[in-house]
Length: 215
Ligand code: AMP
Image (cartoon, rainbow, N blue to C red):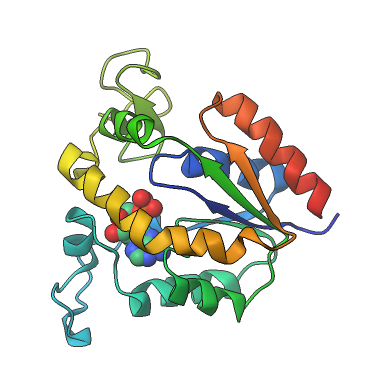
């Protein structure tokens, strides 16, 4: 089996991060995630590009998309170094999708579907480990000791963009920019929809089977 090239699509909170980690571990491919790459470079000076904000972090904290010039550069560098991959959080608009199509072929495009009310609940209750990246939820997935990461003992935080107002803006931006991306891939052979409201294990079973069938 060749290394799969997988694109995961879905709204913020649909479970892309969780399933990407499983795909990366299960199939031994790189996890390319623009969100994590941007969070690691939130303070980068992009003022010379002439947008309304001077750093990626200012776009992110208001729920807006970071400019394509910045994001495409991250993806090109990551794709250059890789054979198989799972791409998570990119492309988020049609221009990014066309940029990606010109550079690589995809074996599977998986869309995780989750209702909006459930997304708001998942995101505003999410807590993350700033050190190892593990995700928790204040109701559904609590760590053994409140506020402390089970994996590495660090103190959990709420992402600055997981507050209710920013979450609603992120969902609006998703509907406006990223739903056309879903339409762009929906007619292709690689495309499949999976119910993201199932348990993470059930979603993973469906994701794993889908990828195995396509490579
Ligand atoms: P995520 O962790 O994928 O939810 O991304 C967090 C934030 O990073 C988003 O709300 C955007 O501000 C920014 N971001 C991540 N990926 C992209 C992308 N492909 N295009 C533009 N902005 C992005």
